[in-house]
Length: 103
Picture 1: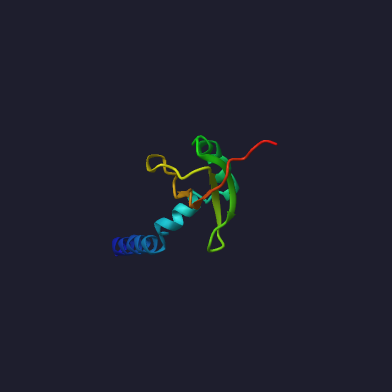
Picture 2: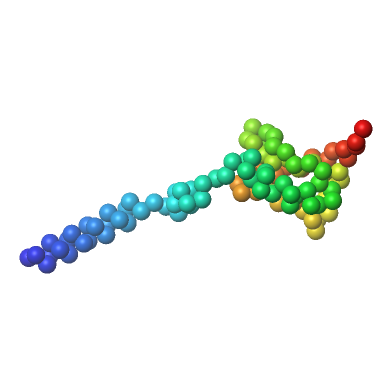
């Protein structure tokens, strides 16, 4: 009889663990919280500015009102040097601008 109760207890314990186990996305959110856009920009700014056509890296608002990383270019990038479309969850948008000049 004690053995049956023990097995029943273990079975219920197993079921409670299975049903309450968080899904992967919730686990990932807790283990890898999203960095602020300012931190992501600072983290990748030097790498982005390494491209000869890149003259600026900033933060702005995208078409949907979300914060995006804006990369200013002097000319369109060749396909072999394309920039990423997202950086750590934030969209990257490019803008063709003139080359800044010292006055």
